[in-house]
Image (cartoon, rainbow, N blue to C red; front, side, top):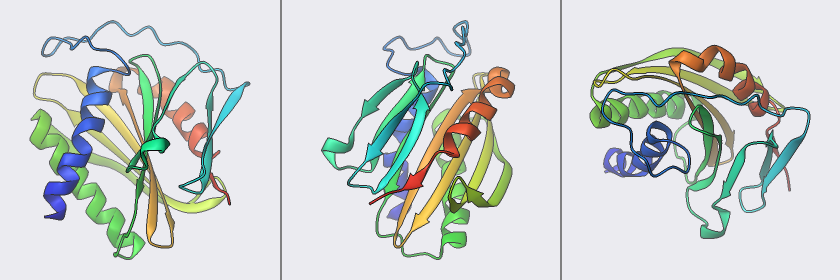
Length: 195
């Protein structure tokens, strides 16, 4: 039951990342739109504060924010820059597992859901535990080699708080990973729980 629910909940994120941020123009199978990355404005960061979730995070001022907190759902916000990089903030309530076990389960589910939706192969490329910004958490990274030939890099940052887990799900095409991963790490470092 939980697997089916998670699959349904992850599908919008998958579609959002792989088709593009805010765009309605689906790409033909196996064809990338040309990526025209814009340097993130890390000197002028804006703050997204989720009062209901009890956290805040900063993001580059030349990125777009789609605040979803008013709906009081699992997906709290989408923040991105064109079709080359972005993230979605999620809040999972009533997590009953010990955090390390939850991270294991979460990673397995993400891989299963992505492979089921896109075909091809996905593998976990990295994992780390420790401080992310001011709070302990976990970092997971994945590579998806889609059946249609597209290759995507995903990096997830997870922070536990009581029976809640806040997740920053990030994605970027592999071809611009080198440029975008340090930006994602820098954004994640600004995360903090607030009252």
